[in-house]
Structures are given as structure tokens and as C-alpha cells.
Amino acid sequence: MKKNTEPMAPEQLYHIYNRGINRTKIFKEYRNYRFFLRKYQKYICPIADTYAYCLLGNHFHFLVKIKSANEIFEHKKIKTEQREHYDLSRLIAAQFGTLFNCYAQAFNKTNDRTGGLFENPFRRILVEDEVYFTQLIKYLHFNPENHGIVHDFRQYKNSSYYDISTMKKSFVDKKSVLNYFGGIDEFKQFHSTAVDEKNIISLLLE
Image (cartoon, rainbow, N blue to C red; front, side, top):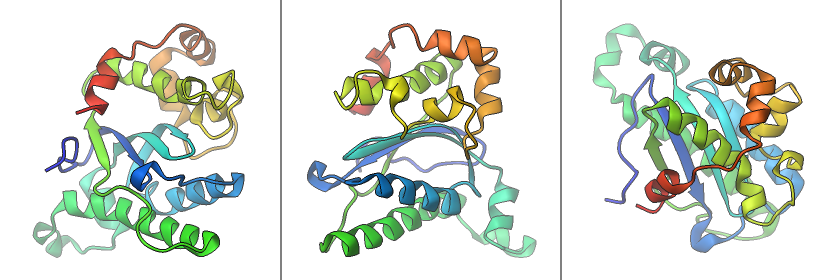
């Protein structure tokens, strides 16, 4: 089994990431990014709170906290007496699978292609401490600059930094994120220093 594909559990924080098969582009136009996020809100927001994200040409990152078991069961309309028969980790993974399949079908139709679009299974890393949490948020936001897509990550509109720093209406749980940093000024100040990538990169490469 691939590393970083362990079952996910309710009320846990995860770094979710994936890329196109053979590093193929999964976002070719600005409308692709918007469409993906709309579908993300439809399929993932009901089962997870989102703290950060970044979409790039051939891959993406999300930092999420899976909601409680009861919230997931209620979203799936599963009756109380039937819940003991369900594997929650499968329900969570299936919800992400639905997002990827829905997006891939639309992308393939628009681009006259067939077959899979995303690597399978998608990867996830359990986030267990606050230092890693804050550094991960910064790492996600720095990605467009690190990949040479923009000169200044602050100007990149397909990440949660733009949503949070401008207080733009968004599905991102800005209140919880800013509470970790102590406010919007502290959030921006934290992003003015270099990201400590060593631990993050080592986990991604497993």
C-alpha cells in the first residue's frame, strides 16, 4: 500500500494532496479552478472544515478537519439504527472520490480526453501538532511562488491566502485559522518569514 493513504477518522486534521496522472495538468484555465472549488464545496464542505488550500496546474493541497461522525452520518442521511454497520473511513474517502470523479468527467469532456485524471489513491497526512499546522499553512500558501507560477504568493488567487488576507467571502474557516495566529496582522506577519519545509517535504516524499 502506498504511504500516506491510511484510513481517515472523524474530528482529525489532515493534509490532503493529489496530482494528475503522470503529472498531467488538472487545471488548464481559470474556470477549471473555479469549477473544482464549487464541486469541493458541494462534496467536501459537508463532511470537513477547510483551513487552507492551494490549487496549482498539476496538483493541489488542502488542510481540513473532518467533521464529527454524527455530522457525516446526518449528511449522508443514514439512520441512527443503521450507523453501526458503516465504515466511516470509507464514507469519508468515498466523498473525496466523488469530487475527483465528478471533476474528471467534466474536465475530460471539455478537453476531449478519456481515462483517469488523478492519481489513485489520493494522499493524506495526519496533522498532530500546532507547529506543523501553522508551518503547513504557510507551505501551502508559498507553493505558487516556489513553483515559479507567480513572483509573489500574495497575489495568487487560487489559494486560501488570498481569501483570508482580503477577508473575501469563502468556504475557508477563516475565523479558526486566524485564532491560531492571533489575528489578521499576525497571520500576515507569519507569512513574511521563510517556511520551514524540511519536516513537511519529508512527509510528502514518503
